[in-house]
Length: 136
Image (cartoon, rainbow, N blue to C red; front, side, top):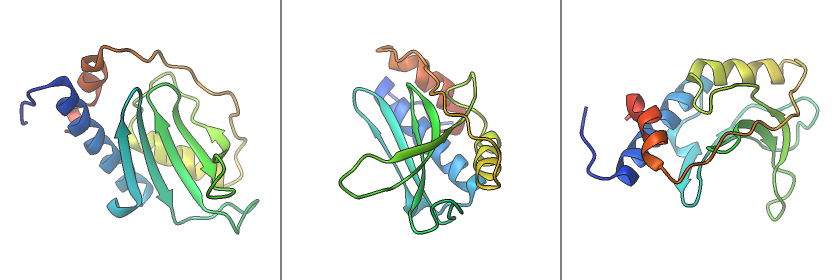
């Protein structure tokens, strides 16, 4: 495993690897993913699957270090996405297979969790980088 010189580089490499692992589990190609590290770390996966309740709207899977994973629909390009379910987890970095099961359960008609999880966002980026390093 490569040793990254700065916490920011380590976080970026770890999050990129984690996003690839989740995308593989969910069946999303790499070009339908993105992430950003600013005041918070966030990630996006565009899903090709549709939700039967809104078959004409795009689905996305979004992650943030403060709230974990959420499944959402894009209602309008200029408006915020509408969350249809949150992954009920006590881990901000759950296993990719757990995220894939979440998506399958919600899209199969399972009861959505609508309580937004809260994870402490820390200025100590090395802590999140440490959690993600196995994916780097």
